[in-house]
Length: 374
Length: 49
Image (cartoon, rainbow over all chains, first blue to last red; front, side, top):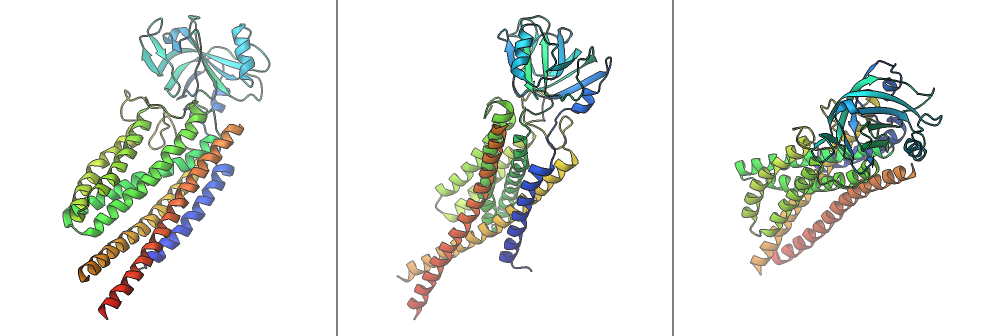
């Protein structure tokens, strides 16, 4: 059997190399993201009369008239635009002078809106649009003012009622506002993966300990939990840095994904706190094994919170098994390498941490023996 | 745009610092424990003699 120390060193070198490769791929290889069901190119090439379905999440909402609430679909026009200069666009919009050279628009007469937040606070039964809401609209292209070589830089949803106009500037729908910052994803998501993996190992280690009462499983369980907290901390600190760019806010307490991940982090902090609070080794191992098993419920809660129920509001992008997201092959390769790197790094850390735990036990034993002799 | 790059730099720094500080901490911790064990073993062997 290969020496564990040697395996750890090899995996460390491999994971560092893979992380460096990920940085390179993320910056120079992976394309800028689009989360729309239909790509920007498809949207831009649509003819008058074409049926379009555009979905994504709202990054920023500007409202005129105080409420970011849309009327029922038949009163809403959805515009796909190349805003270029959003400040000038707003100015032109306010003076009803939109058809300018420096911005173009392709309106759709919307016949369905889904997502958002149904609200009873608006002037009528409306769709309250909040930053981060998942939203999709469907309708027919009614006119075109798209200049050649335009890029979709934003979308807007206009209510004909005149009171409520909601604008999503650059990338509010489907295309991200901060595509460069999206490259944070290539480390944010693998960190989250590594934290779920760590807590999974804690679950297995805890169950095996309860079954066999073998201390080595307890060592694996708490070592893995400690590493999981490091990865979880990285995930929940890099996420807000990205969110600030994309959504305009660092954190949203009404987003289930964010909240459940924060709860997961707290629960596993609690695991380590609990261990630190119990002095007697066998009680410590037994109680923390039970806690380690029960706390695993927070992992599926966090993992699935952005997709399990339509009632749960989450604007967090879905990556796996998502119909509204999806990665390009280049992005998939980049994130795949990052996931491999973080998995190897996790194994390296686990080997090292378990080694330390064994050494700590040996140290305690030596201290006990010296104490007895004296 | 520059904000976006700054955010990217900050996030990547968090990742690198977080991971490698933790790895560094593990290696230092092990070195200290190994040193303590060696010291205690020496003490035990002295007692034995």
